[in-house]
Amino acid sequence: MIAGWRCAVCGVTVDAATPYTFTCPRSTPEDRHHVLHPVVVGDEPPVLDDINPFVAYGPRLGWWAFARTHGMTEGACIALTRDVADCFAVTPFTPSLELSDELGADVWIKDETGNVGGSHKGRHLVTTLLHLRAAEALGLGQGGTRRSLAIASCGNAAIAAAVLAQRSEWPLQVFVPAWASMAVLTHLEELGASITVCPRRREDPPGDPAIHRFREAVAAGAAAFSVQGPDNALCLDGGRTIGWEIADALTAAGESPLDRAVVQVGGGAFAAGVGWGLGPDVRIDTVQAEGCAPLARAWRRADDRGLEADEVGAHWAELMTPWDEPHSAADGILDDEAYDWLGVFDVMLRSGGRPLVAPEAAIVRAHELAESTGIPVSVTGSAGLAALLEPDGAPAPGERVAVVFSGVER
Ligand SMILES: Cc1ncc(COP(=O)(O)O)c(C=O)c1O
Ligand SMILES: [Zn+2]
Image (cartoon, rainbow, N blue to C red; front, side, top):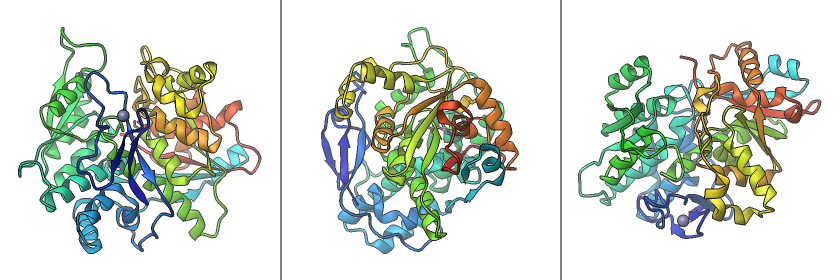
């Protein structure tokens, strides 16, 4: 079960009972190179029998441990989950005849396209909202008024954030870049989000102006409703449910476990969650597009310097640097930095996995193949499959390997 949090950079630990464990206590606006990771001790608590993963796996989650140590009963935790997160249900995980035939392996698909807002992103966000709602119910709220939630995104994460915030009637500010699509903005507005379009200002430092405005809002008191661990570690908590679901679906069907999962990486929270949920016996290979591959570059740099697993965090500024001019048809994974690279390194190192880089042609081909399954997945959401099409990621004959299709094509 989760005992608390530990910074993967400076080693500071934070107890699970602490409210608002979003960032490392040593993280500052001048030095954001800190990230809290969940600390799991002993066996995981048994799974509750429920179709909603946030009930079923509730007792494993950080917000639940927080609420329970402050006296919330298990029944009250379940009731709160139903109120905040009733829109979640365990998503399908099935073998794919099309992909298995094409690749000569045993390929399974975890299909997240029917999840909240069309992707897995809600899994990351809902654990923050549950923590805030629990703190409020326990009288540990901040000043009695609801501080607004803030997110910088104009894609899947923003839509999931708006769906969840609306259900809880919690105000949400969404910071979007100037090029955001009108269709997404209209949808966000319909969901009641307040939108701030963020053109670059002359005085802005380098980097995405939507992120600058988001950080200003957080500095002014908004709660970081983020899908990136360094801004809010609680997103890493809920991300693990996807790995638990995959592992338990195979066990329940009497099937043998996976040999490998291949996971697309943008910021990296997704791959870290899949890996932590599946455990070290399933090899986690990650995939980025050749037009934006800061993770593989950081891995190579760490290797060149001969750094051990516990040394890389101290070298953040040298190893994980922003990618110049990210580009790919997989436009949801163009984060110029893989913010959660330390979590992703952890799951790859522990499982014997590697960061793969897919040529653009493989990303496009993977999407064509993905469409042949009939699942309406976006190019971003099928990018993991691209790894299996390349010689360094090709499956061994009969290998049991999973891909996660996330992000419905809009
Ligand atoms: C559909 C989809 N898949 C995968 C990812 C990658 O997740 P992460 O940014 O956590 O690496 C994203 C978002 O960035 C996404 O929208
Ligand atoms: Zn720290």
